[in-house]
Length: 425
Image (cartoon, rainbow, N blue to C red; front, top):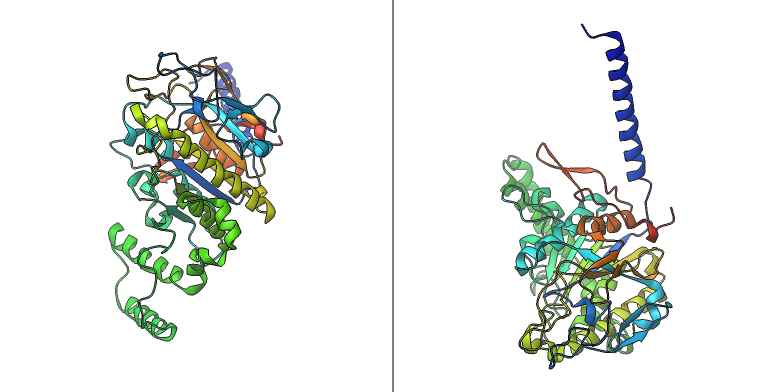
C-alpha cells in the first residue's frame, strides 16, 4: 500500500502538473490578433538578407571583401536601414517588420528548404505535413461563402499542399493572371441554364450512388463540389484585372505586381490565404538563387519587389484592408556575406530575414539583430515554428493546439511561440 505521505506528495505533484498545463493552455490562447487574411509572398531561390532587409557594410566581390552588394538607405523607422533598391518601401516601414533572425539548418537543397518554409518542419518519411496555407484554410475557412479559402498564384507542389488534412484544405491555383484558374471557365456554349441542369443531374446521380468509400474517392468528390462552387461568374470576376484603373495597374508594375494586385482582389472576394510566387519572373536569369553572375542583375528583382510590395501596402491601406491583411514574405534561406568565385553568393540558414507587414501588428521596422557580417544572431532568434506561430496568432489561430493525422496528434506549429513584441499583450 502507498504510504500516506507519498500519496499526498503524489497528489500535490499531479495537481501542480495540472495547474502548469492549465497555465500553458491559457498562455497559448492569450495572444490573438485581429487579422482576417494572409497574402504570402514567396521569393523562390533564397533572398539575400544582406542585400535587402538587413544591409551591412558594403563589400567588394572583385576583391573578395565580404559585405552587402549595395548601399543602404534610411527608412521611416529611425535606426532601421534597407538596401538602396527598396526606396519605395523605405517610407512605409512603420507598417512593416523585417524579422532578421529567422534560422533553420537546411541549406544544401532548395526543395527541402522550400518544404521547411512552407510546412514549418523537416521532410518526414512517415507524415506529409500540411502547408501554412492549408492549416490557415483548415482553421479559418474562407472569409465569404463562394470563395476558396486558399489560392496559389504559382506552380503547385506537395510542399504547398494540405498533407494529412486532405483535399478540402488544398488550394486553387493559377499561373497566368490574364486567364485565371485553368478548368474553371465555362466553355463557349455552356449557358447558366445549361450549367444548372448539369448540376441538378449530378445531384440526382449522387443520391443514387453509395457514399465515397476511400480517401481518393472523397478527395475527387470534394474537388467536383468545390469546382462547381467557384466556376460561377461571381468568383471568376475576381480575375478580371482589366476592371482596375490603368493607373493603378501600372503602379503595381509587371507580372509579379499584377499577381499582387490580383491577391488584393481575391482578399475582397473572400479568400483567406493567398500565396504569390515571385520565382517565375527571372529578370536576372537566376531568380533569387544568385550564385555567380546571377547577382549582377539582382537589383532588378529587388526593384520589382519594391514596386509591387509598396503598391500593395498603399492599396490595401486606401481600401482599409491593411489592418485586416497580414502580408508575409518568406524564402528558402538567406545568403552569406562572402562572395563565391563568380561574384555571387552561396546559401545560409543560420540567420536570414522574413518579413511581416500590416495585419494589425505593432510594427517596428525590424526585429532581432545579427552581427556585423549578418552570419550570426546577436539577439531575439526566431525559429521557423516561432515565425509560423506569429502568423497563426495574428489570424486568431491557437498556435499551441494539435492537429490530427488519423489518431496521431501533431502540434500545429511544432511548439513555436509568437513574437510577443508584435502584439498588444
